[in-house]
Length: 168
Image (cartoon, rainbow, N blue to C red; front, side, top):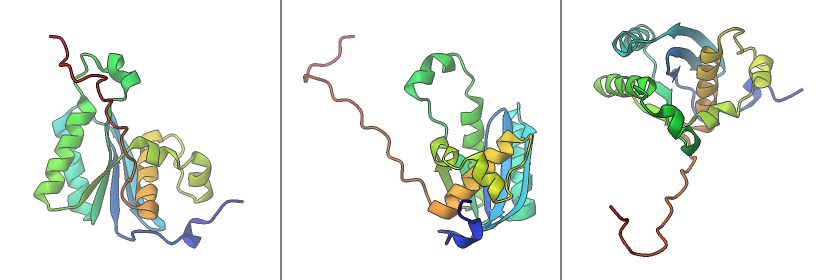
């Protein structure tokens, strides 16, 4: 059997509110090694979703917010054409709320959370059946408390082969 969660020394023991933003948004309140709460809800309208985030923050008073970072990978460009970028707008609203409340906020790439598999969540009694977005938020909370802020580097931009300006 794998490692028990309470046998690991975390980077943080803060009460963390982790958010998996999107058209369905997942929440997790995590204070190592305990899941204090979780939820997921339809969040098709950014203003009402942002108000809900604020209500959760006001009620539970987290010490840190972790939100999944939104990145358009090269293979997603065509799919994102004409998108209203709902998730990006929601992340912006969450950043504004955190700034207004002077709450530290960390953005984490999805890959960091996806490294924590369902098998591990189940072993640690953190898995929530039928709640994939809440589980993703739980993954973000666990990843942040165990490993700290993301240190994943983005690939460097390609340099042009010559110093010529691109044609217009």
